[in-house]
Image (cartoon, rainbow, N blue to C red):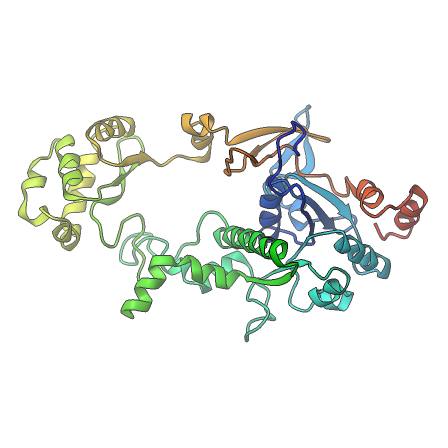
Length: 412
């Protein structure tokens, strides 16, 4: 149950999260939003690498920076932080004991790294036979690249995303481009969330746990979707089209007199309405542009004419005109405009939460809106080790003297 008494979809699940940075924490944050008790294990003294990935940092009531980097805040809400030195024998024993009281273990260490600590799947399965154990790595647990470290930027390149992202090579600014957010990390976290939930459903039906092997490269290849399918069924690698579309014209961005808009004309009727609204009806009658295949064939002639037409009016004027006649269009918002947008505000996608050092922090709300078991973002990302005593006491039954002894040895 939530604090308000609303049922939690995963209120019966405990997740032991040994991951850090983004892909793993994104998965565990999803699970926390759905009500799971997520215990985040961090290194004493430093914690998750992203705690230091600033500026910007959350600010306190006086406007001064706290130690909480905005990057860290983006992926760790709803969790409890426990500091444990897993390189120590006693720290390893604590993690094994916590695993025994957990349903899921999530980790993103290099292949084989946790085996030396007795924290690999085989070791933890011995203490918790129905455990769901999810490993996230760059390249998976087998294959010639398994030993390599994987980073989102590298995988975007290796996995083909950058080959279809960016302006056309023959145009100014052409060349490969990474996405503006770490899409491969985020999608790996999303796929990992799905896999964990599926494994828990299987466990609940059969009593059997299992091992989940998630790889950034696998995810990026899967994310190619229709682009990957196009290649596999044609043998022709696709190329970059920038903000245009390989198969539809006009379906791209245009510069207005004061900004940019997207025009997504999906059929001949919408194209005709577009040019008529812009005062260029002759472009609808021109036989070179009468159908979409002809417009694709003659895009290099047509697009400069459309660009000239669009540049004569302001962005909001174009959007109002095109919405009135049913031509799909929209602005290209910066992030400030995104959070000021009336629809984003109506959907309450920004949420303000109390925070022990900043007073309050504003975060992005989970997009999962469920009627019976709503996702919650009720707890701010934890301070480093904020819940160490609480978890050791309430989950493992340690008393004050035992906890003090562990802290005195630097284990927690």
